[in-house]
Length: 379
Ligand SMILES: [Zn+2]
Image (cartoon, rainbow, N blue to C red; front, side, top):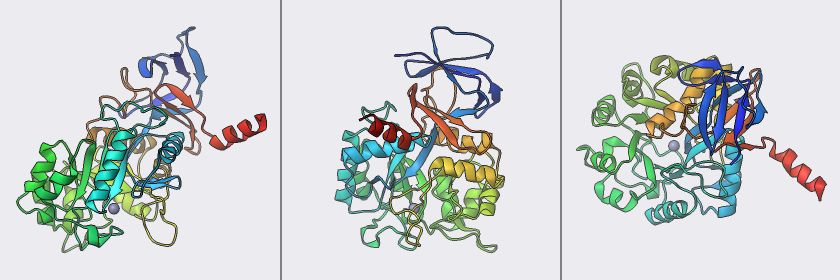
């Protein structure tokens, strides 16, 4: 496998910002060296004047124009979808399944296990982004806060339901903890290695505190599909914003949350306990409703920077290192460090657009349209 040197860029990690070159071999970052050194055996990728960050990680991705994880995706659609995500800077994501009949969910989990899901984060053949596991958003959700989830398929948050659903490949589950007052289902989830996230829930402040004390450390699309923050009744949102153990996931598309609300969450949670997700879906925001979003994670990063909600370094942290940590994947992704996978994004520092993406040490073409056109012309 070829050796690559990313030369001349400004390297941005959760811990520091510095001018350094990144050496890559065998798909891994092998060294981070001063820029005056030379390494003749390496292919040089000149990223002078550019920002280099870890590849982005989206914990809530329902699909996009190319594919719908809720339906019956095909292998071809999955290949196209992961390519689009990677080209847009998302090098790791959790395919997300919303509430459906349990048999349908089980079939889709099995299909994903056969088509590229790898708990060790290895990249499946033909795919351009890593899929370490599934986010089950439902079906154990509150009938009072279903959003677009079909109410006829909502299930109790019980051990019986989880016994049918929790199988290898499930990494994260959004659930309504108030449906499980003795925390038995929550305990079952956690003992099976699944991260629990409070969402689509009508939990009160007390319900949420109880869940956080029982080990819940995440809130799904904070403010959306839960009781609003009221000055006399702060609810689950108030509990999450006040609890330093809890990471708040947020959809920074300007529609699910006002820019000021994003800034408010980030001021309260700080750069360590906020996670950007897209909740992107095939239907997205078209058609007037909020059926997930229509953005890529890089758009969310750009939005937060332009809204001045946080610095670029901190925003990138919320879209790479923080989600990796929350899922226990930070040994391999989410950071620029020796030994980590060489999944990197090269950004334009003026408009924060994604210029180049490296996955597993391979440079992707960022303008797939140009690539397509060139191929056509060559025929
Ligand atoms: Zn949702």
